[in-house]
Length: 399
Ligand SMILES: Cc1cc2nc3c(=O)[nH]c(=O)nc-3n(C[C@H](O)[C@H](O)[C@H](O)COP(=O)(O)OP(=O)(O)OC[C@H]3O[C@@H](n4cnc5c(N)ncnc54)[C@H](O)[C@@H]3O)c2cc1C
Image (cartoon, rainbow, N blue to C red; front, side, top):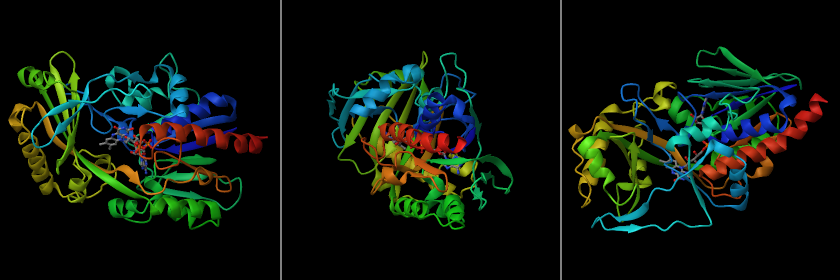
């Protein structure tokens, strides 16, 4: 029986783990997921805090659209792992505040996770109808993989290590469910070579080197989000607006306002910056990010407060929206930087997403699928497609 280590428990990591566990339960003795965040979700995560139990904030993707035939077929097979997102959407004129409803495209499905929590998509995909992890999946959260190596002999396993160089896992197959460990931006954030690039330099695997070269050419469009949570009168003010998801037009700082009711009396609001604004404010992660918390990534904290002020001032300037006075909020404002909100460039071709010689595979929204690059749908589909591709070589080797 084989073992698989998946780095990343965003939607793609969950999708590949689920497919492998359900397709050939007897082929694997362990499918482990390592996730540097506190829980599942990745860029489709949900922020919570113990001090305010009803608070839950989808601070990355607020929902996902499923648009392709393959995506819609897959969705039908995912059972309760997703829910329909039916909240009203609109565009907001950034200068006048005029609101235009966005009609639902009936050819698409709009989805969120259980109880409206996006993180539940990447969590529930790993579970069965009794809320148990599908066998043989095991999860490790706040577990950042900092080093990778593989011995020269064909039977040698992949070894995964943490920031102290201590081994944290071994596996026959390694799946990069996110481009982080393979992309040069690792060096700017954490220092040193990206772990998979360092491991590949010890091997002579042309397809792995080709795949890594393609990933390295991809760039990233960042987004800054400001998280707010309020109760009572202010929550009512936000919820009395005609929309829950507003896409700004003609605005240099803000691109989206997401209004997310929480429990009986609460309401979260997430402001998304434009990509240009986030590019102009590089070097700030937000103190709550996994990169800062687990990876010791450095961040300019003094700049954080100024960015929050600028984004709130931009909100205040849009007519017709509740005043953004900081003291009115029970939680926040809190800044979160998504350095790679949307990967850009040429998606990694499917043919290079599995490198059988090194037993490495790539999945995530940076890999080519029928769906648009940089979407939850592409993450879901790429997980399934990688699982279907590696099952045959795994069965062949285990004989
Ligand atoms: C602000 C924002 C708005 C968005 N809006 C939409 C939208 O409206 N619709 C839509 O479809 N998509 C949207 N997206 C994009 C969508 O969120 C992503 O396409 C999707 O979530 C990608 O999933 P993934 O599994 O491929 O990658 P990720 O979610 O990035 O998962 C990769 C995971 O790997 C983990 N990881 C990385 N390196 C390591 C390591 N060394 N060790 C351990 N763990 C590691 C990361 O913590 C992460 O959880 C949005 C994204 C953002 C940020």
